[in-house]
View 1: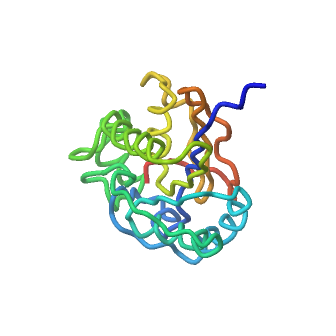
View 2: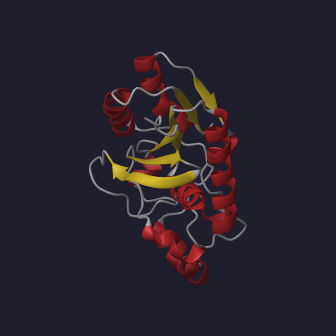
View 3: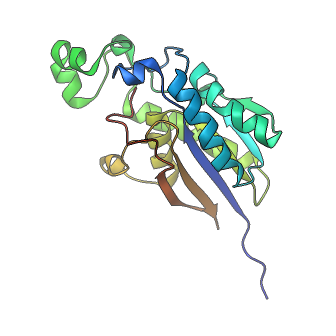
Length: 209
């Protein structure tokens, strides 16, 4: 009997809630801490993710992602590695502004969802997708790797991995705070196994915060 093809599985985990999330502010790469709700979300989600028996944890180096990874590291005994290419989309002049302020001050850019002086959607997909590919290449066959990152970075990086054309990237809905998606590479092809799992308590209104 032929042995099963080796796989690589990535669990793409969005960070917990911050004050700016609660206020519907665009966070981007501004380094915001988790709030009390976010810390509780990370603790609860870590207990669930421990059951997946991860082999490694790799996180964005922004504080909200690192603090989300910490409970899982404590429960599993794994060390967290950090990768700056897992950071959220840089939002340029939008960072710190609320949704309402962005709509009022930058109506055309808001309609196109292109932050002035920020990263383009394609640039984020390439950066985050390349980071995920690099993580997968470094992992041994059969490994399960938890990747702690941000809403837009995960969604766009995952779209890159799955080979979706840009006009279909929006079919993957946003991730709620501290929820995750699971992708697997088998026979050199990626597939989506789960999306927005472990939602606490409801999906986010936008994933580019």
